[in-house]
Structures are given as structure tokens and as C-alpha cells.
Figure (cartoon, one colour):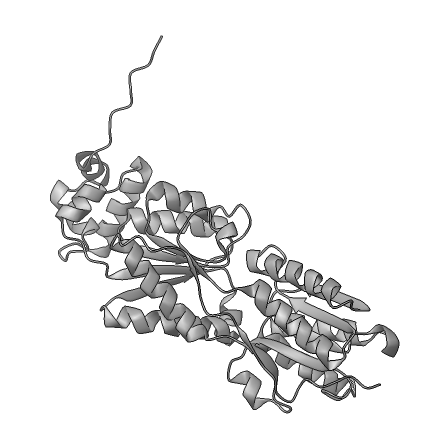
Length: 345
């Protein structure tokens, strides 16, 4: 026996579930005044329970503007406050949003799965007009949710990770190769990389690029250690690498962010090793931190503020239907400073 099709959920059903009028539902989803926060929350909860959201046609007829862009980051709050990359990235995004009288809705989450649910709630609740998705992973659970919702979004990551979403990314393969070739040209034959979490897509790309560059340079030793990007983890990894016997430890270390590189500099001093005479250190991103240390830190310099601005501009192109292609941002460039030199003979 064939069951009858399930009736389509309407705004009337949402109003009935929430115990309000259809007009109140419209006010809530169009962010209009006249409702208490408790009533708005009840309406959004009813809509989520019923799986209802305003149609794209209704949104267009209502003349909806993009007032808010969503960004969720899977980082502990304390670490995010210390990490120069995201502070610079957000400032770049904000520089574009402010030109358009648009606000950024920033939330910290514990997992990509939690973020996927959050993006759905934001979009169906009409809290955002678009989203920026960062820290892509292989088979990322956020990608199918964004595509199913029709949520205008830009993914910050290589196209191999973004499932067809419009993306902006940096060419990490080229940058890692340049870092290894530079250190090898100085004479280093044992080089280590202290990277981010192995599950992150860009960490995987950098790890593969480091292995390939090491083979090409015919290094005598190449080590890679995965961390959580924190200074504490960077210090632990550095200490482990440098406690090996002098002929078995790296003479140069590449770090995936500047916080870990600064921590590594402190560990070298703690162990009585001179930088760069005993070990060379090379950071990633090149924030002001790299220029305040002694010696100053060599870095793969990346215009993170400009990167954030480019991502925001691309998102507005997606929202307005201009159909932008995915595109790379400027590749990080090597800036040699006082922390790198030829190894001791």
C-alpha cells in the first residue's frame, strides 16, 4: 500500500506550533522589531522542529539584505585570543564587512559536526546571509550541509577539500617547498617540521609537500610532528626533537605558525642552544611576534589581513550571484631574518 505524500510545511504550521500569528513568524525571520527575544526563540525552535525555512523566492521578494556573515572556528577561546593568524584574518574580513555596513557573527565550536548544525540553525533562523568556512578536512561534514541548504559560503581551503564550494586558498605546496629548499641551500641536511593537527586538510597538504621537498633535496633526516598549534605543544615538540644526540637531531625546524616558533626559540635558550648557530628556526605567517624576538624570526610571510579581505569580497560575489571562480591568494614568501644561518660544520 502506497502511503500518501507528507504535506508541505508552511508558515501557518510554524505559527501554530509556536503559538503566534503568521505575521509574528514573518517579523522574526525578517529581523523586524516588535517581538520579545523569548518569542523569537520559540518561533525559530518551532521552525527547526518542523524543518521549515523561508524560500529563496520569499527572501528575494522581501528584499532581504546581507546584514550578518557567519564564521565558526574550532579552537579553544584561550588559544584563539593568542593566535595572531585568526586575529589578522578576522580583521581583514571586518575591513570589507564594515564597508558594507555588515556584521560578523563569530562562534567557537568544538567540532566540524557541531558547526554543521550551527550553520543550519543560523541559515534557517535567518541570522546570517552567508558564511565563511575554515579549517577544511577530508570528507568535511560541513560541505554537504552547506550545499543542501543552498547557503552562500566561501571555503578557506584548497579545492581538493571543498567539495565544489567556492574557495580561496594559499599555495602551501609551493611555500613549503621554498622553505625546505632555502634551508637545504644553507647547508642543512636534517630538517624538522612542527605542524598542526593531522586531520586538518592544509596540514596534510603541507606534510606531503614537506616529504616531497625533503626527498628532492636528498636530506639525511626529515622529521614531522603534529600538534594543536599552541605554544605549549610547540615547545614540547621542540624539546623532544632537540634532546636527541647532536648528530641525530635536526639543525633546522620549520613551524606551522609563529606562536610555536616563538616557543621553540625559548626552548632552544632553555637548553643552552644558540639560534641560529646551533639550530635554525623558520616560522609561518609572519606576525609582529616574529619581529619582536631576539634573534628576529625568519618566516614564510603571508598577508593574512589581505587574505581575510579577499575571502570576504569573494563571499559577497557568491551572495550576489556573480559566480566567482575559486582562486588562490598570494603565495607566502620567504623573509630571511636572524634565526636562520648555515649549520655548524
